[in-house]
Amino acid sequence: MIHYNISFAGAGRVAGTFCREMFRAGFKILQVVSENDTDGRYLADICGAKWSSDLSFIDSNDIIIVAVPDHSLTKVLSGIRCSGKTIVAHTAGSCGLEVFPADLGKAGIFYPLQTFSKEREISFKDLPFLIEAKEEATCKMLGTLAGALGGKACFVDDERRKLLHLSAVFVNNFTNYMLTEGKEIASRAGFSFEILAPLIRETISKALEIGPLPSQTGPAVRNDLNTIEKHIELLSFSPDLQKLYKEVTQSIIKHYKTSS
Image (spheres, rainbow, N blue to C red):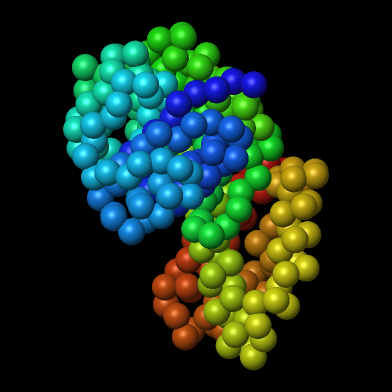
């Protein structure tokens, strides 16, 4: 069993999930540093760590995980004071190694390809961790950490990680927004979101089993202009949704004409 001393800068969704999972996996959590007193103290308490708002980390840390919003990342990294032997790794998918100040030599990226929500447990089994570092030894150590959590280490460069982050925005964030709008439209018909659950499950299962390209159905892929016009008329209550429907429909029509 690998034993690392780990600390966190941040106490939000990602930091909280990582901290609890690493604690359960047997790692020693030494410090939780955050601006938010309530979240930080709570996270530190359940993991037997010390909370502080000061970005000073003790020398016995092996790894510091920086899990803060992207807009705060540069400021937080520039404020960290730690041993030169300690690895400092951020969890952002859209930011590279360039955000680290020069004095943090053992810098790395430990980006989980997953969505996180408060109070929701995440399975780490086979979870891809996109890893990049300035030094090979740092890459290896972060890869070992990913494996100890049950995840899968994927060593990638900056461009490939950012493309995968963009891919994740499409399959997760955009998909979830479509579910939100689908729920609202169903409610106008007097039905709850649950009526869509079998369709949602089959849509995702089919895409995973046979691939998204052959799984596409609906009026756009058939170029059924009569049905499309009826849908646009039904969306008269929302010009924004009409615009979205038209743009996505035209994109599907164009894509499948090219693919056929």
